[in-house]
Length: 332
Image (cartoon, rainbow, N blue to C red; front, side, top):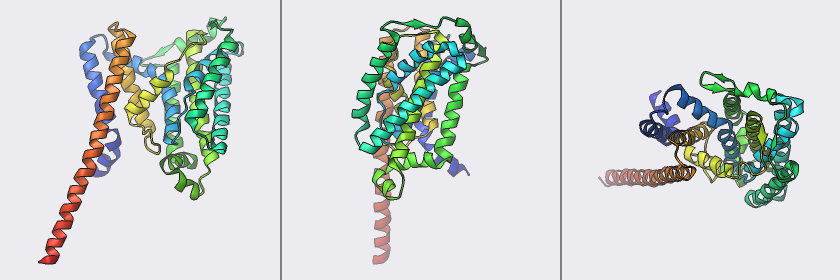
């Protein structure tokens, strides 16, 4: 029982340790970052960066990379404001649906043509940003009826409506990736694409689902942010892609595909939220926050690299010792 628990928790050991150490250090340096307020601020990070990182992680697990998530979030924010007359649920649903449809189209094109997702999504990143400026007429826009945004401003202990929606999406993504055939196909395509395709896993369908989830999550994040803030600007979320990617890497999502879980993403988002919220409470500049985040990311990557080198070496030493004993026994 204990051995199985240790084996299950091994992929989460490093991000969990990084989260604990980071939280302790930030709490010591920032006395105001303690108690319910600190937990609330960390959970709030899941409603924007968390959702983007969640969708991005799905494409990474599939062995792809969606560079358009920041532009998709910005466009969804504009769509949310423009359709706010349909009500809070209506405008968020419309913006999210647009993201899902666009992501699915991206996946179909990438899957059928067999082109690099990095190359293709650079184009869609630029295209979506252009649409954002066109729809907003190159200036920030606001929701005229602020009353529809009131529910998103309510707080329920350490939760808000936005963080509850984000956490619900994390649970649904975990169930999807773990217990559905489509989720297992995403891991198969990302881990060993040629073998998976030879075994009958459909590449186009799998990539379509992956990119639909990615764009859908980014759209939901942008829609929630716009609805809560009551406004949207075409230049928003330029750095959201890098922040989401950093959260995935901090949590242990592999850039090579086929490895990582929703829990890894959650740990990465929590680490990033602790750093950003804690240093912001101290009045730290954004440049210093980026410096700390980058240094922490490099540290985690270095530890993972060293651990990956040491484990095979130890395994090789044990194997050589075992062979030596068997040869000695045979000679005796």
